[in-house]
Image (cartoon, rainbow, N blue to C red; front, top):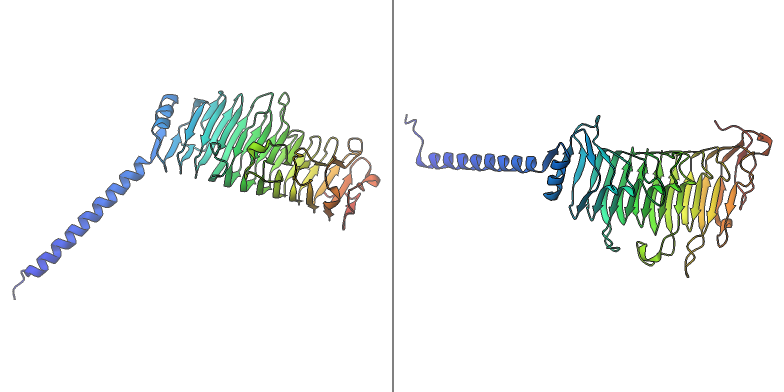
Length: 370
């Protein structure tokens, strides 16, 4: 028997080898491309160099240590900025802002520590292109402190974001808002901690305004987080609304399963057209429990309306709270619905029943819900 390969068999073998060789080459090239998309920086100089050469889809890993603020990124999509070691996050100190991101779709920030900025801790915006929101932004395990301390300066400022997530962030001491969102949509703020600090002129913990819609705030903890820990709505100049022409400050907002402790009131609804406040625990507000206000009064704007407040546990002291709901002019408090809330005046249980702008359904009064 002749054991030699035929010409046809030898040609087929060569083809297999060529195909295999090409496949290996492609895999090696792909591996090189993946490694090229990840860059480690270990000091300020390396960080500045990396920022000058960023490409879309890059992951920027930052070694432990201290870094300067004033970092700016524009027009880079799919960027991830994260700690090399999540247990030892890099610390960005000082500057007007630690990080400014403009028109960065698909941005992810993880395990960063930020403090001592004069304006904002992190600023993420759409570059002023009001009809082109920045999509798919994620912030996770970000710690921010000591922003300001005076004026309208925020720990996290977002303008024109769509499909965003902010999770497990810790904010401690800011001058304006802990999280201030203008014209942002389809977002989730979850499991964050916001704590006000003496000497910092915090006005709000989380503020959602400028046409913001479809945002959920859940499982967060607020401790003396400004005068309005949760400010659903607000006051925005018409030029900054996203979308332009919106006739409400906020719409379709859900605030659920949070703990809100201290502050002048637990939550304010300001120029809102539809929101739900449910399943929250309110502890010892200092003056009011809720506020119903109208700060934007341009022609055609809806009055603050259509808010459902239900299934909340509300513990307060009559020595502090005489008026449960502070109602401003040009509002529609009669459109608010109160359902199944449990009200308890700790110092005077017999005086737990609140005076509300509309009759409550199935409320419970005078029994400690804790």
